[in-house]
Image (cartoon, rainbow, N blue to C red; front, side):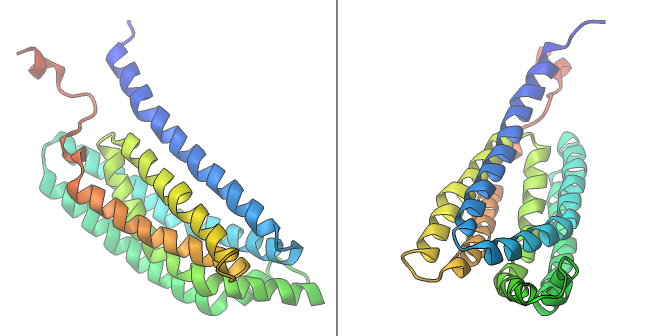
Length: 232
């Protein structure tokens, strides 16, 4: 038994940007929460309920993204780009169907769902009003998730995690956070401006992810190329 340094190198080359992507997303979440907290405990509580619901609703999109990574990776290795493209199409279709269902449910029934987390009181009614306002914008984010997670799943299958890190940084720190501060503050929308910024940054992220998918060099990347072929 001996260590395969090429495999070890690939693990770090792919894994470090992937872990940094998660750090970027988490740090952006901390900044958004800090901004939300400026608007008082009622808004913070409503946002907290929204985050708990979102954490559950996002699971199908994560699962579809993981599935697209596996299937696309197999077909990249087999040099079947037609199947890679088909993988993305099917992933987006399934994700969009789930996204539309999430949008309908959360747009119309968010106060009822939010009430599960609360005991009846005067403050609860105010918190549910925040939840209702939150999902009047965020309910429409789920079709965007369908596209983003599917595309990123395919890009991840090629080992192009550096691009995913860059795309997440753009979406979070160049779009979401500046928009949130601008809309909540100077634009005068208050805490609703944060919800607008989250939705707008996700829609713009769809565009940038799709642009990289169409124009980026990920198609030429391979994880652990055939070394026997390289020696010939």
